[in-house]
Image 1 (tube, rainbow, N blue to C red):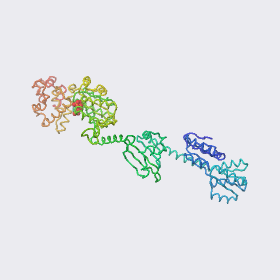
Image 2: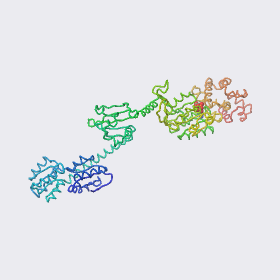
Image 3: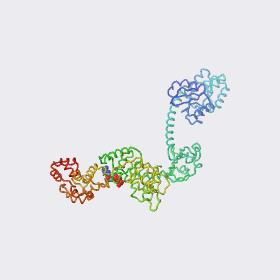
Image 4: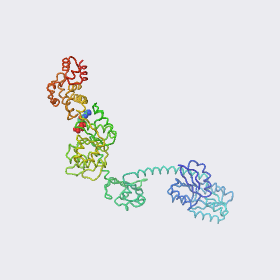
Length: 637
Ligand SMILES: Nc1ncnc2c1ncn2[C@@H]1O[C@H](COP(=O)(O)OP(=O)(O)OP(=O)(O)O)[C@@H](O)[C@H]1O
């Protein structure tokens, strides 16, 4: 036994005997670096044992042997076997050697060499007695009868040559180095093909192993030839126990008999197995035109239902999206800039955010911008106002329902907002108004990351980020036991307070200008928002803005409609404006002050004239900043 090469080369094992192995050794150097070749010097049963051992240990890609040895190995091993074949030329060379010793030669061949030998005999003018064998015992018998017939020179395989030598006769080997080389070349080809085949098999197997679906295959008789781990689990039976058994005896409801008989595939059948519903596909396997077996694939009906839900949600015409980005959020006051920076930082995290602030301060705007600046951008953004729905409706909106969950429930059920928002963000506005029973369900979603539809027991995994908002003091509600404390801490991981508009007065003219300009544009008015806003700035800044930016939006909208009736700004009727925006005038201050609302160029000139050009005093009297006065004067120049 000898190993000439190591490494990831094709592994070849040559099993020969005496004379043959000597020839093999003589050619091995020619294969250095091309194959890892082991040579075993054994015959028949011993050779077979040695080969089986190596096959069990997966140490060999291809075996090589000759004559009866090769026939035995081929019938017992599943590893490929390349045979060293004796050619007519090899026999001719051996007979020529024999003729030098005697004119009568005994020839023992593996199986009958046929007509080829007949012509050789005629050419050599030799008396050749030929006997053929198939088994080891027959080889021995052939030799014995030739020896008994008085042959002194016997040509044959290694075993025959050895027997001759033991009897003091001449034994001449039929094998040649060329025959060995041909067998080695065949073996290299076989090894390459079988390695490719093994790699493909391994790849397929690993796909099968990792499939969530339960898969099994049978041969044409219905015996199991492959099962994956999901199927093992379902059958409650290991692959080792299942392989080779009749599927109909292990799991009659899964039988593939009908497909094996008809050759017709059965796709998408609903079956029940182990009290679970499955969708079953039974597919016939065809090889070289004939039916070679069948494959069964079972899909868990629950997973299919969930996938169906996702598909329906994905197919909804209007996708729930966030429209706002941070750069669309206007405001330059330090308090606002701080809040925006903090929100941008939060956007980069995965944590839950609680936004607090009065109504209309921009909480939803911030939630959308955070979503769009997060890794979830492009995924759904779903907002719901928890104060806007009665409890049962809010529950079904949030968690969805199964068909038949309640009277009037929609056919096919309905996905809740958490399902719709899967992989994205859910914005829960006015969270402080969520009824306590729903707070418990919400907490479950946060903890388990799964929802259960109304009327169902199936859990649906959801991956959502939650941003909630409130204008209330949530802690006070916690103390009054109107809000669950554990939920409060779950929601309030990151906190962002948005300042009221009156607490960031600097932003009022900025926002008012932007909002008015947008409103004027919508009305196709040529007026410039900045000059209008400058003229009413004191009035805007004096107002408390209880409705914050939303209220400012409403007022600028109204103002735009009013202004669009005046193509010439200087002709604006101040009393009419007062009627249009009464809340701004309702400050309890002297009415004479309020007449300055629309600060015309003339009003500025008048003030400066009265105060002898003192800009500081004029700005004070006009109720505007010196910068505003300076800008207006420059525009008037
Ligand atoms: N900084 C801002 N820049 C531009 N528009 C703003 C800004 N802040 C708020 N808005 C606008 O004001 C309106 C109200 O904002 P939003 O709905 O986000 O407020 P909210 O705090 O969520 O209100 P509520 O608590 O009443 O739901 C929206 O139309 C929004 O576009």
